[in-house]
Image (cartoon, rainbow, N blue to C red; front, side, top):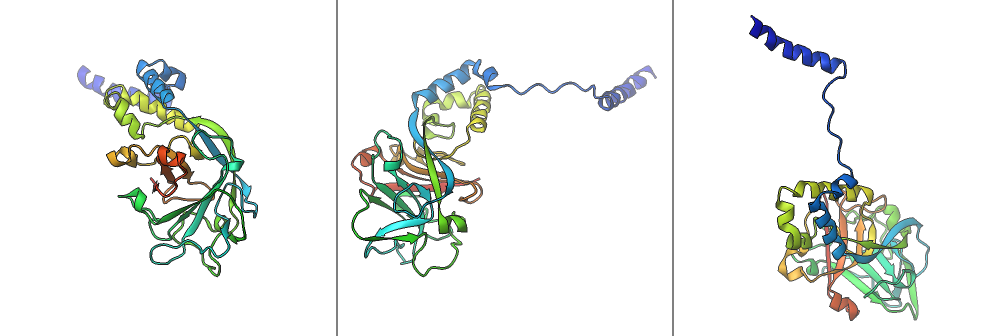
Length: 295
């Protein structure tokens, strides 16, 4: 009888404790300062700092002005006189995605100090991407060392094209008016998703210490969520496509655009155009890689 009463008392006492709010306290979630005391986390941070790269964050700052220059998503785009609107291999007009005006950005090592890069992508269900070969997608990058000679400012889409892009990451208002991007110089560090992490600290991340490193990395993300940027490191919502040996030297970001109120890559994803440093230094923008992913 005593044993039976003891068994009954346990759930009764537990129920009483729950009712009175006297359940065991949930352990407090560790802060970044707590996590930094862990030698494994310290090793991860030291690794990140060793791979820091300068970057220009691009903050949306309202409607883009109707001028040939300026860094923006969508909106007006300048084409030289007699220059045809870019098309894909089937002759379908592409979408004007964005442009970077280097003369309006803070100086960035390796990158031009002037000139404009314009980015166009095909209007299909993959936004022109080739997920197997990022260099072989349906996209076009136009480098304009100078805006000179006769030309025309087109308002975000080909002349006579009055439809909404069903196959474009840009929202309709972004296509029509464009969103200006305000630059800010920062330093960026690789994330745990970077193939560099797998190469350099893969064993550490896979060890029993990896959990605290990933927790710390999550807090880094919460404190400084990714933004549109030029330079720095690419971001990913899935895996780093550069892990393939053929792409491990693709190391410079021409532009990385994240989903926000003006652009949406699938389910809250991101898209990026990248280039090898050697080609960037030569200003050879014929060898560009384009990829995007989403959750």
